[in-house]
Image (cartoon, rainbow, N blue to C red):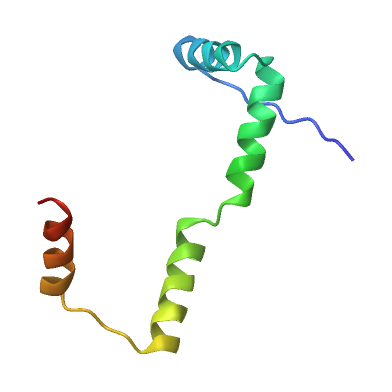
Length: 78
């Protein structure tokens, strides 16, 4: 079942940018925004993501020192 959503008080700049993105994608603004909303809804919220990370951390019992993490990061930069 489809529902309508109304968003008020959108600035002209935001509306124009979204219209341009839709046009570049070869889509109507309605189609573009619907797909963006669906993509957004499929992603976990930051709180959900952090909760999952904490659960995995507790399950595995793994801990890395910040020095190890930074060393791996720096190794990729060389």
